[in-house]
Image 1 (spheres, rainbow, N blue to C red):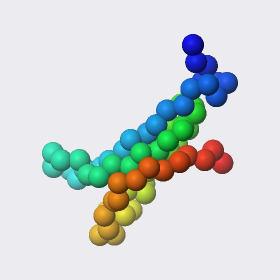
Image 2: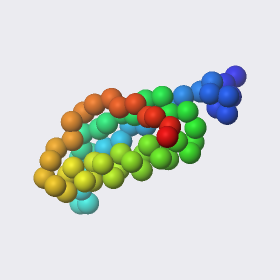
Image 3: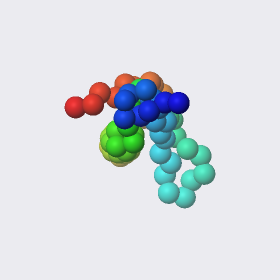
Image 4: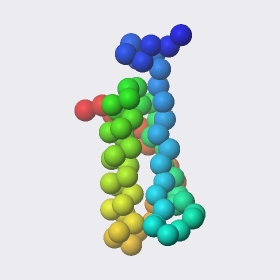
Length: 71
């Protein structure tokens, strides 16, 4: 029995964006070792903003594994 508030449970956030009107998702990124529901939300929001900024500037997302640092 894992207790999230004691740091006994960790989860990963996998995220990819797709443009409106398309069916295919883009390249995903994975954020590992997220240890609270609030941190899951923060990690997802950060990655959404990061992906959107890269794509809107004409760049491409590289599939990668990232680590979440609570700060």
